[in-house]
Image (tube, rainbow, N blue to C red; front, side, top):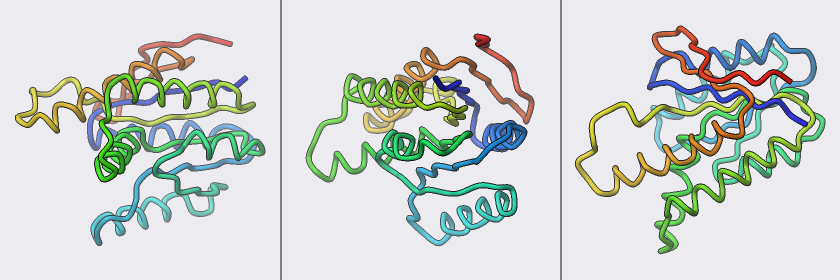
Length: 182
């Protein structure tokens, strides 16, 4: 059974770097599951920079913007997995469902999130999952933005409940919110 470590924080808080460094301190093969699609040149440059940062550190990268659970299930050989990030995954799900004309509800996201958590739990290694903390800001002006915030919040709650450890990173400093030892 996997150990799940959920790392959260605000944008540019250092959460991804924290999770990556912790993952790199563990032995075994490493898999980075990237949920961010290339949508413009600026994002393409960010993705390239992140790939360079992992280069030579033993990472294999798998890009999966809609089904990170399938990437986890399809990688039993990975001892350490880092999924970065749930916030972009929720964005992608919302975007694709909107283009199909399907409504995305909190219940739908909770179901998908719990399935991801169960898939991670059935893995044999350690899984780091990165997400943004979106509930500490102001109430967004538009209904669509409020929905997105609510979906990410619900996803985070589901993963935090399933996680063995939850770390909030603020200003590059990790704060342990939950730690269930083996």
